[in-house]
Length: 614
Image 1: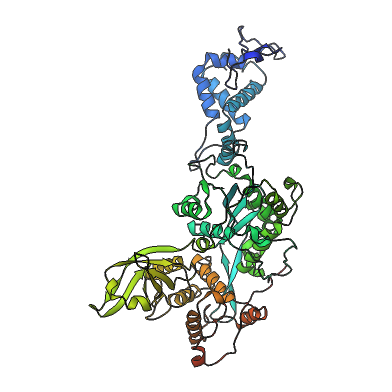
Image 2 (image 1 turned 120 degrees about the horizontal axis):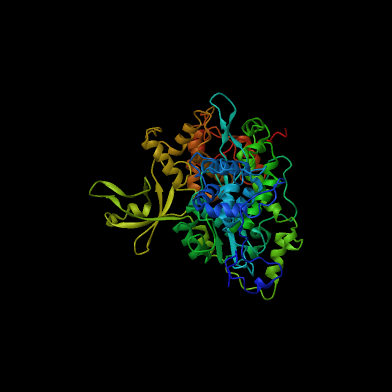
């Protein structure tokens, strides 16, 4: 019935031959011979005589210094032994010539064995002393036995990865040409299916820290159709079978999963994300407060962490503009200078990332019985006993980022103004609403249904009757933008750092403001990067914009054709390039009067250049 060190009783284990149940206790006085023999059990005997010393000694061995405090860490056995000898000197052991001062090594081996015993009895503190909080947290992770995944699309893992690379963007210069500006390290959010290791979707975030909108965009990517990008970066190519599941076959478009494991970051477990998973995907969110996962513990999401590791080893960590995982990985290189000299642009990163993730699905993996992830997915879905997989409603997927708010109708004949509403700092009105003076003073529903174009919203009464489309008034009537971009620009306006002229375009003014100091050392503003992304998408896919908006956008661009800003000085060569690929039709340049009748807006990016191979 004696307790074993593992916490259980010895039981039948106590009958094993040569098993020592009780520790050795020395009963005779310590008297070593000339060779130093005869000191068995001396350490335990000394600590039994000095219980207070034993407590202080164990406490000092296991002492943990807070991350914000100054203290001694990673104490070697030599330092611990020296502290122990000093304490014994204070107690008079050296004067009385008692053990360990009666030996040649002063009991160093005995102290080292005791330190090892103390650390073994406190594994979590020992792990913290050896490798910090990261190593101590690994002891909290399980082996996955209690959370098995038995079928495809049962569980997915989602996490954000900080890319180990420095990139730049080309900003128009007031003098001539373009000036490269450094972009801070970016994040990529990936959703990976656990059973087959396929990446369902991803999103490249241009923010310094991810938020809920980035997570929702990653979920929408996993439920939407994937298509290959048209590549401009050197010899970068897709493999023959490279694709994401939704691009591999239409049967994988919009497939839902049952559980999604996250690390507990606020962006991944906020209420908006929970609502999207519950109402659109029909999935349960697994996070530290309601599941087995732990905050910032990589071992609880091993599959996606292995994917991130492979992503870095196969590409970004092997490039000269990589920062590496540690400062020593740079090996004397300056990634910032490399990015500026080679002009490795942000647009190249988007292409590189898409190719890497797509090619990942065309590479055989040992843990998938030497099949590619897509082959293994096809095999699992083709099984006769495979359960039916749910599909998300495409309309709900498209509206996953829609913002809905109840606003009061203002104006009316009493004040001599047509009815309008204020929605996120902008005035909106439309043909139907302008005729509904009976709604003045009442509230209606306003929905921002186009994530990248807050210039137009949908309106309806509380009873659900449609009031048509409302358009934003100046200064938010110009170039397409999102509500988040508008919020950031309004912050600059309120801080008196940005001024908008009467009837002007706030987005165009913000772009001019961001490009006014291209030689500054600070990284490009995340809002400016998001504006570039939206304008590029509008240029590459003009059919997504309404025809009336195209007319007005082109007319505004032509009015400012003499400007050197990013909006006004758009490259015609890039437009011609897109036209040659059949993406859009470029009409010949005409006068400003003819242009005002409506031509397609120029693309939003300068020409992409091949990155230097130096």
